[in-house]
Length: 165
View 1 (cartoon, rainbow, N blue to C red):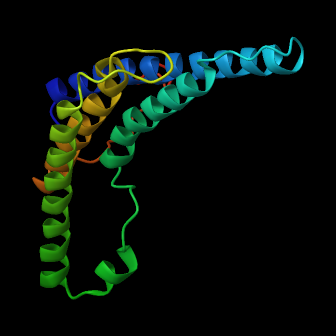
View 2 (cartoon, rainbow, N blue to C red; view 1 turned 45 degrees about the horizontal axis):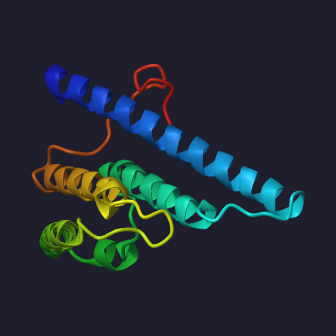
């Protein structure tokens, strides 16, 4: 990987790490506060469950970019690896094209529901869906790089990634 691309990847990784960390702290804090409010004061927070669901989904979609880069999503590797070499490569590339098609459709579907509002917090769903948009776009880019043979993670040490996850 060329140095410029490596620097871009490091910067993106640092931003993703901070976003995932903020989402986790927010989810943990609100969930903990809700437990205290429910069991100590008998007055639960009305938005806590929805907030926890959205922050968790945000962590999942942003974290999926890392998993895509490492080619770590669930697959039938045992079947594909058993195929003879020319067929193995064809099936692998075809599956990458299918994943790209799915991510493009998913991105489009999220954008179609962009203007709805959440039920409890009454947030515009664009706020909630932002992590899905970023996650699907990031996974699309990582999958495309893998398809073109230019992707995959180069193991960076924790200092390179701003503390690393």
